[in-house]
Image (cartoon, rainbow, N blue to C red; front, top):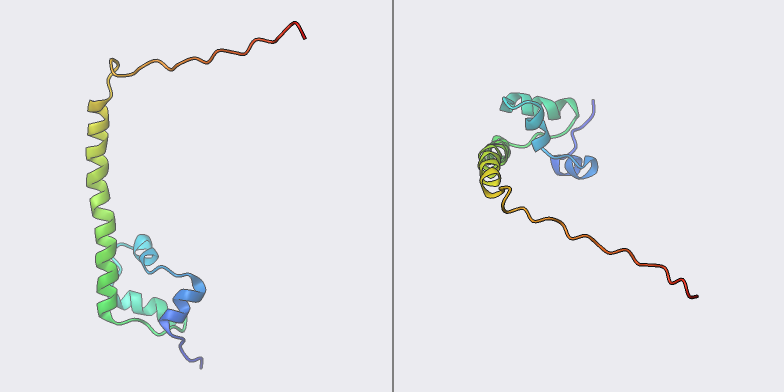
Length: 99
């Protein structure tokens, strides 16, 4: 039987981000979270850690939807055909024929 390694060691070696589990399964329970680490022979973090990670996931995903919608509306209202200025054209250098 293998002994379990610590969660911090696992996270550092594998560059593991616990939010990735929630991106794969939004309805992840603590039991599934714990099972994921047990399969990999890692000491699973406590339920408090799970709750903090889940709350972070919720905070990261929820405001983005609201912000994107408001930005789209603002961009559509701000840009009109009258406000758009034509681009300045560059003059090409002429070749010196006397050389």
